[in-house]
Figure 1 (cartoon, rainbow, N blue to C red):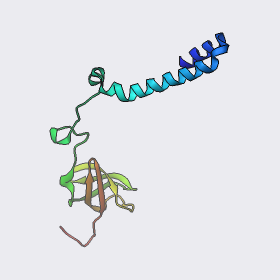
Figure 2: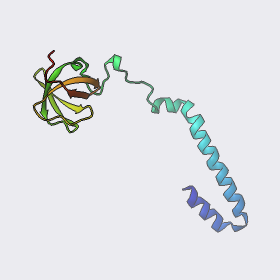
Figure 3: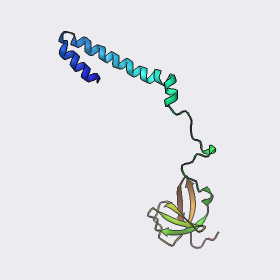
Figure 4: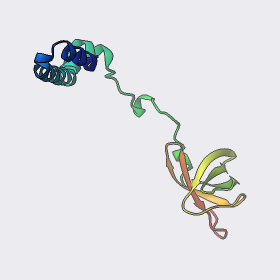
Length: 129
């Protein structure tokens, strides 16, 4: 709309074209500054902008974390190349291998859990826990 008004004004009043362009640029500059600095401090913005935050300690989580799995051992359900699924304590989880591919049926150990991302490594065959 600003460009259309500029074109129409310059077309109809050609003697003041430079003045019209300068005044419109100054007007746009003031509108941008006003929008960036004054609008967020206004009463209207308090009604439009969300001021609450969703904290995990208040019960707002996007996905349940499975941190109790760290150190647990399980079996690979689908090959981890590097992502796949595992079975730990009789429950199936999506997991990611830590560096190398792990074939189906191999024993694994959970080494990290970050949100819904479960990182595993191959468990040594001779080691028991």
